[in-house]
Amino acid sequence: MSDTLFYMPGRVIAGQDALNHLARAAEFGKKPLLITGKSFARQSGLLARAQKLLADAGVQSVLFDQVEPDPAIPTVQAAANLGRNNNCDLVVGIGGGSAMDVAKAAAVLLRNPSPLNRYFGQEKLDRPAAPIVCVPTTAGTASEVTRYAVIVDPQANAKKTIAAESIIPRLALLDAQLTIALPPDLTAQTGMDAFSHALEAYLSTAGNLLSDAFCLQALQMIAHALPAVLAEAKNINLRHEMLLASTLAGLALNTAGTIINHGMAYTLTIRYGIGHGLANALLLPYTIAYIADDYPKKISRLCRILDCEDIEIGLLDFNQRLNIPTSLSEAAILQDDLPALAQSCHLNCARAMPRMKRRMDLHDYSQILQRAF
Ligand SMILES: [Fe+2]
Image (cartoon, rainbow, N blue to C red; front, side, top):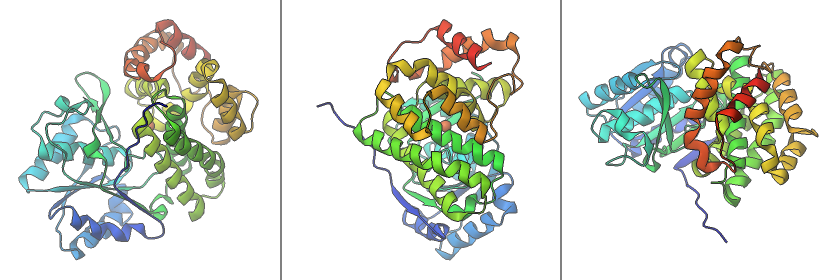
């Protein structure tokens, strides 16, 4: 019997009008720093609703609404400065992974001295982060329940991760209504981010019986709900299923982490600006097929979930059903770039090696990229 580790997150409230529970944020602090992206929350009326819910609970929030996609360290620092200057003692993140990750990283800086890059890596915080409340508006990142915040370090030109138990949000509100306006391409791409989390965590050597159970449930739900929701965008039950599946995958991620697919996807995002979910989806058939022989039982289980004989074909078919490109060339990547990409993948995947059954070298990444091209 091996040791089992599983992180229990804060409170998750899921269901119709779950956003109305935002008043409960007042349990965790008196002055929330409210963090959103630049447009969706404001334009959709979500921001005004959130501010009113907080005000009705007796707390006046301070707004930072300047989060960009793939947010970088200066954004986190600007948010934290605003929070420090206003004596904020709580951070509320509303949006996709970018807004939530900035919220989590800013919560680190509300309780720990700058610069942020001191805290990249495993459990590097001097003191626990300020309490965090998250409300996702996409079903994919699962940042609302994870112990990770991914932030771009512009100096290193790399995505870096803060991994710390104290940045698991105390409260996550899963309100499917907030995801209903997500356009089809982003629904598919963010959904494939969740699918990648579940699949990579399932194959991670850091996983265990508990995380595997969450992964399998998430994979089954996404295999059903993601193509279905693309055909029926306004179906609230399918949107809810996707949100729950994404959260389940995130819960597994806390224990098992990702393997090489995420490391390779970071490279595509940094070098080409390809969105996180799309980059993961693009590579997934090829990375998983390359290492499939290491996990015969788990791969046959995955084939049953995807109703296929061959995992590469099954994942490619799944991407196709979601209108996701099935090769790097379709995503406008040039063949001449593959050697440099392989180098970068090798570097970015180093931290995933402890969770892999085999060591990967430069040749392995070149092979995967050639096949994906
Ligand atoms: Fe991800």
